[in-house]
Length: 318
Image (cartoon, rainbow, N blue to C red; front, side):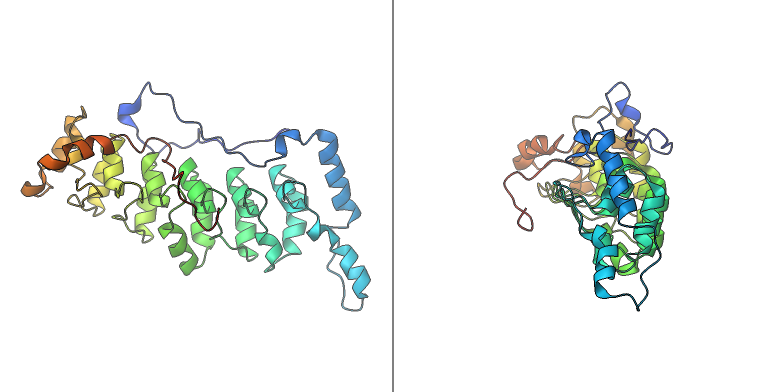
C-alpha cells in the first residue's frame, strides 16, 4: 500500500517575499522507523490479524468470562519491533474502518496515548498524515494532545511547522483550555514553540490564530532569546513583521545578545522592514551596541527555515 505523506502545497496564506528562488526546505516527516520496510504482504498480515482478533466486534458483555474478554482485547498489546501498535499502523496506512473500530473501543484509555519508538502517539501520526477527521475522533475520545515525540514536538507543533491549517483548527477546537495553553507555551527540544515555528515558516494565518487564542506574542525562543518579531526580520518577511506589530509585538524586546528586531535589519537589504521598525523602536535602541556588534553578526542567520538543535543538552532524559 502506498503511503501518502503530508504536503503543504495547499497552503495559500503565507508570504515569503524575499525567498523567491531559494529552494524550499523539505517538510517530509519520517512517520515510522520501520515503515519503509513494511511490504504489502506484511500489511495484509496486519490486517488479517486485526480481523482475527475481532477488532470490529461489539464490546464484550459483562457476562463474558475474563478469558474471553482478554482474548477479544489482545490486539491492544500487539506492537511491532518499532513500537507501533495496530492503531499506529492503521493510521499510517489510512485504514479508516480499523481506526474507527479501535478508537471507539479505547475511549478514555491509555491505549490512545501509546508512543512508538519515536515517541509518536496516534495523534502525532494523524497530523503527519494530514487526517484531520482522525485527529478529531482521537481528541473526542480522550487522547492527550500534550505528549511530545522524540523532537519535543506536540501534534500542534507539527501542524504549525507544516502549515496544516485543518489539523491546527481541529486540535485547537477540540482540546481542553489547559491543554491548549500548555501546547502553545511549550518549546520543543530545539527551543521553539508553536508561534516560533509558524513564524519561521511564514504561516501568517496560524500566527494570527495563535495570538487570538492567547499565545504569548513576545515569547522568546531558547537558542538566542528571539521573539517571533525577531524571527520575522531574520526571515525578511515584511507581511509577518506588519502582522506581528499590528497584533502587539514589542519592537523594543531584546534578544539574549541585547538586540532589538530593528538591530537585525543591519546587513539585510529590505528597506521596507527597516523603515517599518525604525519609527516604532525607541531612539536609544536603534544603534547597535558597539561592544556587541560581533554578537549581532553571530546571531544573524542562526535560525533558518528549520530550527537549530541543542546537541549538548538532554531533555527529559532523551
